[in-house]
Amino acid sequence: MTGDLEALADPGCGWSYRRDASAFGVIPGSPIAYWASDAVIKAFATNNTLGAQSKARSGLKTGNNDMFLREWHEVGVSSIGIGMSDTVAACASGCKWFPYNKGGEYRNWYGNRSLVVNYANDGEEIRLHSRISGASTCFTSSDYYFHEGITWTALTSGRNSFRFSPDGAIFDSNKGPMLYPQTHSLLLYTLALLNASTNSLFITFVNPTLSLQNGDVDNLPYTYCNDVFETVLGLSNENIQISRVDWTS
Image 1: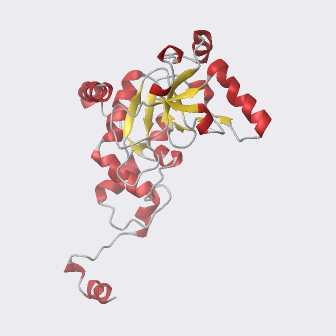
Image 2: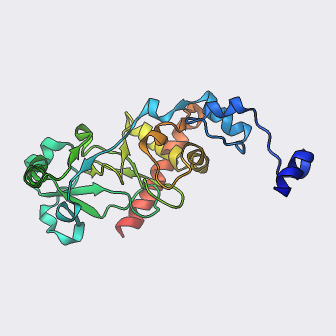
Image 3: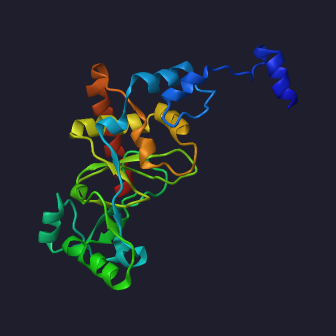
């Protein structure tokens, strides 16, 4: 309380903040973020949102992860379908297990590809188990299953990390959401924006909690800069390749 009174008496003390309340309205959710700089306010006020370019999506809920998820080394390698382009190709492959995105440790650009899901015949066993047991399942955004995109760890006590997910993966409804920019070039560019230190700052304003919601990702400011677009693509692709080599080693 003494510090508060001192700040009121002496605005130049170093811990006195002044902000027009109307400025909070440009940040989604209108948080009372009095410490937001003019640059942060401007970023939210003058740029489009990420959701206008590509919405964050939730995926599969199996109803019983112990039954339907495995580490990749727990199943026969010949039963894992790698690089499937869509559900039709996955069904035609005759494979039972497919890569599954479900968050994981802090890791940017590429990685955390350790889980597989039993999705044989378009999730036939998951659907059957749900009918018999009454387990709650959902196949949200199934049209996007197996397509390349960007995934991230939704629940973390530290900085959020965003990764490239190549063709062939299904994604979790809660812990490993994804987004799908319209082209591969836009994917690389968007991934670079998401992994930038400025984006980590923006996240603290749209969601200061441990769990980053899809709506929060949609509300992040998104800017397209043609002057540096090709440079960003090259750097993003290089970072993915370095992280891929590190992960697969």
